[in-house]
Image (cartoon, rainbow, N blue to C red; front, side, top):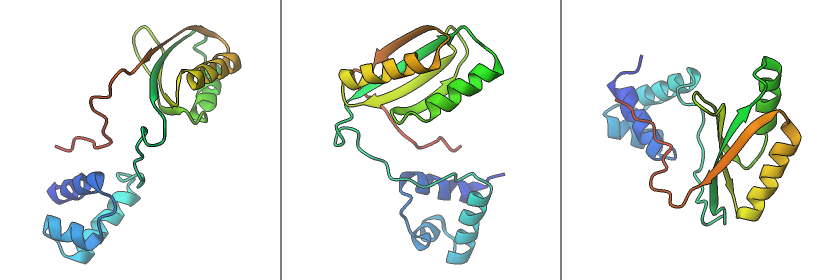
Amino acid sequence: MLDKKDKEILKLLQYDCTLSVQKLADAVGLTLTPCWKRIKRLEDKAVISGRVALLNKDKLNLLLSAFVMVKTQNHSHEWHDFFVSHVRHMPEVITFCRTTGEYDYLIHVVVRDIKDYDFFYKKLVGSVGEIRDITSCFSMEEIKNTTQLPLV
């Protein structure tokens, strides 16, 4: 169970994970050691699953964001495991979900341009098989993109 101090620490770390333990402690009204112990406990319990640098897609010339919806003809555990292991290792894929509704999977892909997307598409379709339907839509404008989870 997370208390108010844990949530305050997590909110600050989501905003900037480079904050020192001392700055975090000061911001949430704790001393250094209790704050460090809370962070360590949150890491040990995998509430904090990692710390990363967030990169700017535009500065890296990754200008095309596509959402790929896949409908499969095979719903066996074996095919699912094969598909998941294949797609999970594709570097263009930044989010991959099994979904309810008309489509079985949603894949968020980030690439430089339509040519790179076409290469990704051919690689996906040509290597996994048993896809009944696949459709894509492309982001025209990114209105909100955050990694910060709502902590209430």
